[in-house]
Amino acid sequence: MRRSAIIGTGSVLPKTRLSNDELAQNYHIDTSDAWIVERTGIRFRHIADSDETTGTLATEAARRALKNANVAPEEVGLIIVATTTPDYTLPATAMSVQADLGVGDCIAFDVQAVCSGFLYALSVADSMLRTDSAKVALVIGAETFTRLLNWEDRTTCVLFGDGAGAVVLRQTDDVEKGIQTVKLHADGRYKDLLCSDGGVSTTGTVGKLLMKGREVFRHAVTNLVSVTEEALTASGFSASQVDWVVPHQANARILSATAQKLGVPSEQVVMTVDRHANTAAASVPLALDAAVQDGRIKSGDLVVLEAMGGGFTWGAAVIRF
Ligand code: ACO
Image: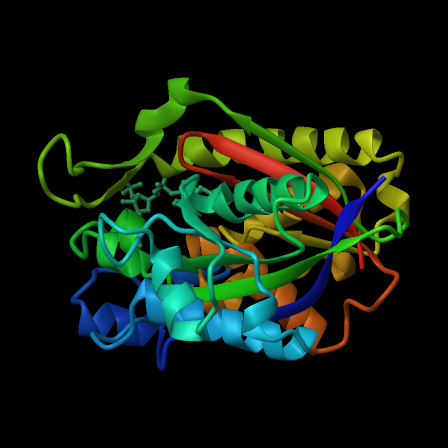
């Protein structure tokens, strides 16, 4: 049975980094470092400047992932960008990545599942590599999510940041390695709890983010625990065999509550929310790259990726590195 394996990761953050105090001052927000740290664990976030877009961040993250995988752009047969904040309504941001990296004829498109987007994209890419649509894929999560924020809404604007992360997937016949399972879910009954108040076909604008934070929080831990257990069971592993959990970085309290319920020690949970904030579809590949580059995640490790986002959408992947 053929699988796909992650053979390289890369990521990038915008140049400008703001602490909670700097954010409050620059955007005139009635908040405090103490409130944000206590409720979310967030201390810093990066915010894209006008010359930085989802496409430029996605391209740079992909370039770094290709370099780390020692793969030439010409070898790429599939590019999927998961994003909520594309450069343009059309064409897909994946087309900019393809052109800017100098990848030749390939399959390229975007997927949209908000904070779960990277897991959705990974699942699609894995299926396409297994069925031979391509041999090498770039899967990217990239966002300029702060462009969707209402800076007058302190309940949401302190929570998010911008960035991009990417992985290179390659077909493998080694069934011990690579993506063992991805499980995905969605429940549109909750679409109004985390949404934008605009869109091309409704208001003709992009809209701004709206979120009922407390209700999102309530669903997050339950959904993340159940989908992670489902993915582990489907791949024949238990939580005690997991070396690293790389969660969507929404809130430190969601991360610890989920890990605790799963029975995974907090030292085995990769946490970047303190310095990245919530970067939506970019958060899982950004955290994954951080743990690969600092040497925590090594070849042979069993790694769980998990995410939940607007929709609701949620998912988990079990991967042998
Ligand atoms: N600074 C200071 N005070 C604030 C701020 C702020 N930035 N935001 C809200 N407050 C105030 C509120 O006005 C309220 O004041 P009141 O009691 O006088 O009315 C008080 O703080 C408590 O507000 P709550 O919204 O009840 O605070 P809560 O403890 O629920 O924390 C938070 C809010 C951090 C948003 C939390 O609900 C949360 O993390 N939810 C999950 C949302 C999330 O992570 N979404 C990301 C996308 S989905 C996902 O990725 C899983």
